[in-house]
Length: 249
Ligand SMILES: [Zn+2]
Image (cartoon, rainbow, N blue to C red; front, side, top):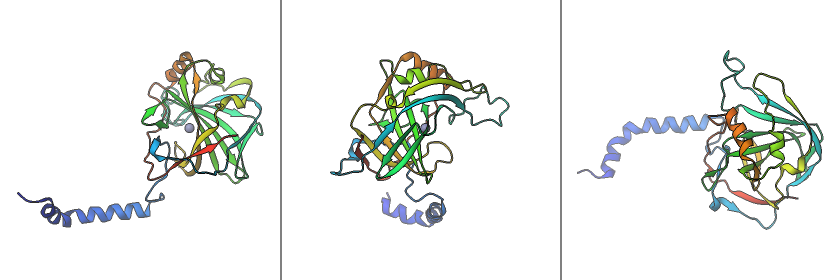
């Protein structure tokens, strides 16, 4: 029968317009030919530990919290019952209560929120929950610390998620917590450049992934009951990106 080469030659005139369309579409896209989207699967082979790297300097204090439901389907008449996968429970912190500094740039903690299952995966494995601590610089650049959450002993996260805010109800006011307890007491994070994981998926977000904290099964069940279909974006290709080991201080 015919070899692959003969078939390719025969089919090339048919395929060529499709190939050109693909190139043109990619070339005119708002994103580059190698999108740098989040979340990603942390492939151990993509991890590098350079000899020197700007440290993630965490400076957190105490803050009262306001837990509120982030609604993405306000135009839907049944939206109060429909769980859009981009919706979440978000804890807003008091302005000035916490910030991080990297290479002299300060990023203020604005809010933190949760996804089930975890958005980032680790060697293909998801955690049941993931917390995102969202920081913004004066110039509007975003830095997010992602904390995977495993089921285990009670932590400060159990306090934060003790009473969930209803989708179409009032936010929940919570007493002050020590924000430092939201960060695991390990010395390294994994850093990469990615994007928002909800629309508009803006790139240029600086990600730092930590080792896991724990939550109780009861807290996980409470959160999953609110988002039975989950509220996590699927992992995106690394496209050659590396994850860098960064000390946390
Ligand atoms: Zn998030």
